[in-house]
Amino acid sequence: MDNDYELNVEEILQTIASAEIIAFRFVVMSQHLVIDTRCSAVDGPMVKVVPHVKSAEEGFQRLKQLRPRFRVPEKICAIWWPKHIDSLVTHRIWPAVVQRLIDTGHPGIGKQCDEVLRELLYLERAEVQAAIRGKGYQALWECQSQDQPKRG
Image 1 (cartoon, rainbow, N blue to C red):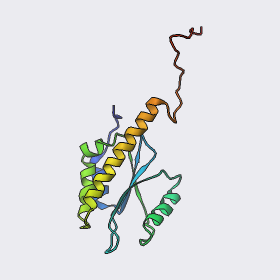
Image 2 (cartoon, rainbow, N blue to C red):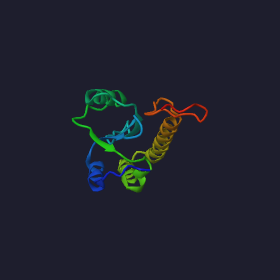
Image 3 (cartoon, rainbow, N blue to C red):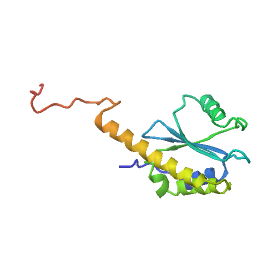
Image 4 (tube, one colour):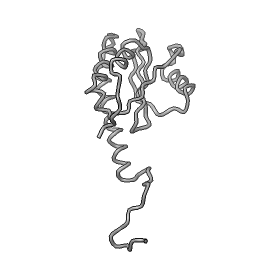
Protein backbone atom coordinates (compact mmCIF):
# COMPACT_ATOMS: atom_id res chain seq x y z
CA MET A 1 0.00 0.00 0.00
CA ASP A 2 1.33 3.44 -0.91
CA ASN A 3 1.34 6.33 1.54
CA ASP A 4 -1.64 8.63 1.27
CA TYR A 5 0.29 11.89 1.12
CA GLU A 6 -0.86 14.77 -1.01
CA LEU A 7 1.62 15.62 -3.73
CA ASN A 8 1.88 18.86 -5.62
CA VAL A 9 2.71 17.14 -8.90
CA GLU A 10 2.64 20.36 -10.91
CA GLU A 11 5.20 21.98 -8.61
CA ILE A 12 7.45 18.91 -8.82
CA LEU A 13 7.16 18.96 -12.62
CA GLN A 14 8.11 22.66 -12.64
CA THR A 15 11.16 21.87 -10.51
CA ILE A 16 12.18 19.10 -12.90
CA ALA A 17 11.78 21.47 -15.85
CA SER A 18 13.86 24.26 -14.31
CA ALA A 19 16.32 22.98 -11.70
CA GLU A 20 19.89 22.16 -12.62
CA ILE A 21 20.28 19.50 -9.96
CA ILE A 22 17.54 17.51 -8.25
CA ALA A 23 17.83 14.94 -5.46
CA PHE A 24 14.94 12.62 -4.68
CA ARG A 25 14.75 11.16 -1.18
CA PHE A 26 12.60 8.08 -0.70
CA VAL A 27 10.58 6.87 2.25
CA VAL A 28 11.38 3.15 1.98
CA MET A 29 15.08 3.18 1.18
CA SER A 30 18.09 5.21 2.22
CA GLN A 31 19.52 5.71 -1.27
CA HIS A 32 18.79 8.93 -3.14
CA LEU A 33 18.30 9.61 -6.81
CA VAL A 34 20.44 12.48 -8.09
CA ILE A 35 19.75 14.13 -11.42
CA ASP A 36 22.26 16.63 -12.76
CA THR A 37 21.12 18.22 -16.00
CA ARG A 38 24.40 20.04 -16.60
CA CYS A 39 26.36 18.79 -19.56
CA SER A 40 29.23 19.63 -21.84
CA ALA A 41 30.78 18.23 -24.99
CA VAL A 42 32.64 15.74 -22.77
CA ASP A 43 30.15 14.99 -19.98
CA GLY A 44 26.52 14.23 -20.49
CA PRO A 45 23.83 14.75 -17.86
CA MET A 46 23.84 12.45 -14.86
CA VAL A 47 21.10 10.31 -13.37
CA LYS A 48 22.40 8.14 -10.56
CA VAL A 49 21.37 6.30 -7.41
CA VAL A 50 23.67 7.37 -4.58
CA PRO A 51 24.01 6.48 -0.90
CA HIS A 52 22.37 8.62 1.77
CA VAL A 53 24.31 11.69 2.88
CA LYS A 54 24.30 13.04 6.44
CA SER A 55 24.29 16.72 5.53
CA ALA A 56 23.83 19.14 2.67
CA GLU A 57 27.56 19.86 2.74
CA GLU A 58 28.30 16.15 2.25
CA GLY A 59 25.85 16.11 -0.65
CA PHE A 60 27.65 18.99 -2.37
CA GLN A 61 31.01 17.28 -1.81
CA ARG A 62 29.73 13.99 -3.23
CA LEU A 63 28.36 15.77 -6.30
CA LYS A 64 31.75 17.42 -6.84
CA GLN A 65 33.39 13.96 -6.67
CA LEU A 66 30.88 12.56 -9.17
CA ARG A 67 31.12 15.55 -11.51
CA PRO A 68 34.68 16.94 -11.09
CA ARG A 69 34.62 18.95 -14.33
CA PHE A 70 31.62 20.99 -13.17
CA ARG A 71 31.55 23.76 -10.60
CA VAL A 72 30.01 23.16 -7.21
CA PRO A 73 26.36 24.16 -7.66
CA GLU A 74 24.73 26.96 -5.72
CA LYS A 75 21.84 24.70 -4.78
CA ILE A 76 20.44 21.23 -5.08
CA CYS A 77 16.66 20.97 -5.20
CA ALA A 78 15.56 18.18 -2.88
CA ILE A 79 12.27 16.38 -3.36
CA TRP A 80 11.01 14.00 -0.70
CA TRP A 81 9.02 11.24 -2.44
CA PRO A 82 6.73 9.60 0.15
CA LYS A 83 5.37 6.98 -2.22
CA HIS A 84 6.61 3.83 -3.91
CA ILE A 85 9.05 4.09 -6.81
CA ASP A 86 6.54 2.94 -9.44
CA SER A 87 4.36 5.92 -8.55
CA LEU A 88 7.05 8.19 -10.06
CA VAL A 89 5.82 6.82 -13.40
CA THR A 90 2.10 6.93 -12.64
CA HIS A 91 2.35 10.53 -11.38
CA ARG A 92 4.19 11.61 -14.60
CA ILE A 93 7.37 12.48 -12.70
CA TRP A 94 9.68 9.89 -14.22
CA PRO A 95 8.66 10.61 -17.84
CA ALA A 96 9.37 14.31 -17.17
CA VAL A 97 12.84 13.46 -15.80
CA VAL A 98 13.62 11.26 -18.80
CA GLN A 99 12.41 13.87 -21.29
CA ARG A 100 14.41 16.63 -19.59
CA LEU A 101 17.57 14.53 -19.88
CA ILE A 102 16.85 13.38 -23.45
CA ASP A 103 16.38 17.03 -24.44
CA THR A 104 20.07 17.61 -23.64
CA GLY A 105 20.83 15.66 -26.81
CA HIS A 106 23.38 13.31 -25.28
CA PRO A 107 23.18 9.80 -26.73
CA GLY A 108 22.41 6.91 -24.45
CA ILE A 109 20.77 8.92 -21.67
CA GLY A 110 17.37 7.34 -22.26
CA LYS A 111 18.84 3.87 -21.78
CA GLN A 112 20.66 5.08 -18.68
CA CYS A 113 17.34 6.37 -17.29
CA ASP A 114 15.74 2.96 -17.90
CA GLU A 115 18.60 1.26 -16.02
CA VAL A 116 18.30 3.65 -13.08
CA LEU A 117 14.55 3.11 -12.81
CA ARG A 118 15.11 -0.67 -12.77
CA GLU A 119 17.76 -0.20 -10.08
CA LEU A 120 15.40 1.91 -7.94
CA LEU A 121 12.62 -0.66 -8.26
CA TYR A 122 15.03 -3.46 -7.33
CA LEU A 123 16.40 -1.59 -4.30
CA GLU A 124 12.92 -0.77 -3.04
CA ARG A 125 11.77 -4.38 -3.44
CA ALA A 126 14.89 -5.65 -1.65
CA GLU A 127 14.34 -3.23 1.24
CA VAL A 128 10.71 -4.26 1.64
CA GLN A 129 11.68 -7.95 1.58
CA ALA A 130 14.39 -7.31 4.18
CA ALA A 131 11.84 -5.60 6.41
CA ILE A 132 9.42 -8.51 6.07
CA ARG A 133 12.16 -11.01 6.91
CA GLY A 134 13.50 -8.86 9.74
CA LYS A 135 16.95 -8.51 8.18
CA GLY A 136 18.35 -5.24 9.46
CA TYR A 137 15.08 -4.45 11.22
CA GLN A 138 13.80 -5.07 14.71
CA ALA A 139 10.19 -5.90 15.46
CA LEU A 140 8.24 -3.58 17.73
CA TRP A 141 6.68 -6.61 19.39
CA GLU A 142 7.57 -10.23 19.94
CA CYS A 143 5.82 -12.99 18.04
CA GLN A 144 4.82 -15.86 20.27
CA SER A 145 5.08 -19.36 18.96
CA GLN A 146 2.05 -21.60 19.40
CA ASP A 147 4.35 -24.02 21.26
CA GLN A 148 5.23 -21.50 23.96
CA PRO A 149 2.88 -20.77 26.83
CA LYS A 150 1.45 -17.28 26.85
CA ARG A 151 2.65 -14.98 29.58
CA GLY A 152 -0.03 -13.52 31.66
